[in-house]
Image (tube, rainbow, N blue to C red; front, side, top):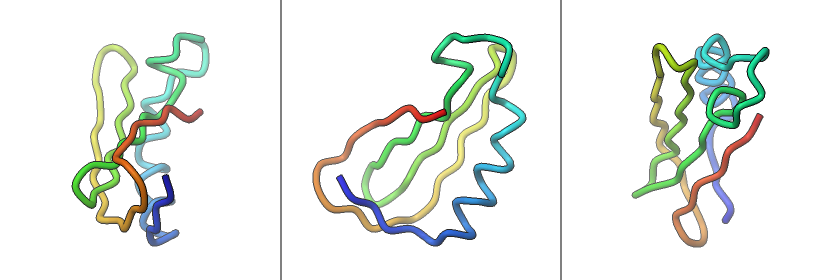
Length: 71
């Protein structure tokens, strides 16, 4: 899959999500940001087990809608 998105928009969202990524815990759920493309939106999710955050950005995508966890 290929997505096209504004660089400053994704940087802003990732910096907002960063505090929710737990560095001490090696669990995949708290060490990564989940990226999901769905219906022309990039959805970013993160959690620290107590609270979570979800952000949506408009994007252009090529290929199938998919999910990816990145750290």
